[in-house]
Image: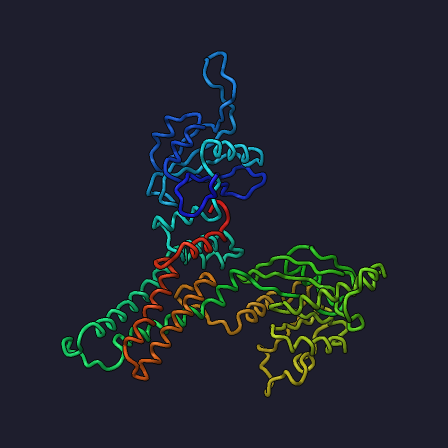
Length: 502
């Protein structure tokens, strides 16, 4: 059997809901003749074939038995499941093709039997993202909206969903289209100067035709490129590691931010011997929060060998500390917890000096503030002198917070500090939409580079025949963002990252 490929017109089918037990499951199908093909295994074939688009038909999925019924002398059928079939007629469907969505019961065996029956009837299993690929090829979606579909599927917070929905509604596509039209206009004026004599056109021939269009578009593209760090943060999230000495209250803080008891909390130092991770929503940012083993300066060095791993609890703790240090190197943010009942210890100072040299932001937390209030001035104690600013920071900018992981005091302020630390340096998003993928960011950068070169050459008085190809390159880069300019390899690379059924 030939290997399926993106772009063929075979009727396809796929499970569109997560596998596993559920009340209902949705199985999607699409392709020319898919309704007639489905009617072969449907209990009311004539009704299904005549059904109008955007209508629902009740019946059973069934498959033929080998035997013939003794009563009727006709083929006997095995009933698979009682279903509802939503019928779609081209072009008024997600893919632009004829198709049907089958709502069946969500048991694992039931879904598998329905899929097997449909594949035996002539459907093939869809490739990853093939439904969205067909929607793109049939003009139902551009590439920015296609990519936003998977953003919605993968969104972990409401803020991520809102941003993806904005792109699915076509705002990014519209912004790109406006910029592309401006560049096409500038390119047309430039090529007009190349094709005709300046005297015939009544033009001076000085400078770059449509220069203002190019400059305005370049600024818009730079703003768009600046949106990517923030959009990526809401899409991909960040890794935040809770660190500190043993028994500082790290596990209590982890549980408090998570809103449930995931880490074991005891009064015995060293209870947490390995890291524990959970996903938490901090003001719309999906945060991978990690509780680590307590850091101790007296347990350093490489992890023990396999022969040494039976050396008792200290060895187990040492392995945990080594893993904690590795996580700290990879963290996007460190929440360093100080035990307020013990104050700032020499070990804390040594560890903080180490972390101050790392590129990620650090938030210092004076825990157990309900029973051990922090000193009036935390900043000089917490940070090494070489990292302090020339003038003392105002209180609202001091990168340290008192809190009580037990009572919840200070948690709201901590969430605000986390948001500020992770979004530091990221331009605030205005009314314009943002970029939705790294691919889009790379193409915007490519267009910016081409336009910067155009303006640079024009400023040096270089001939227009050097500028026109660069303008064309910028136009093509924007066309690739929406899919107006594309190749089979590019499209397959994009849609193969989608889940099956989308």
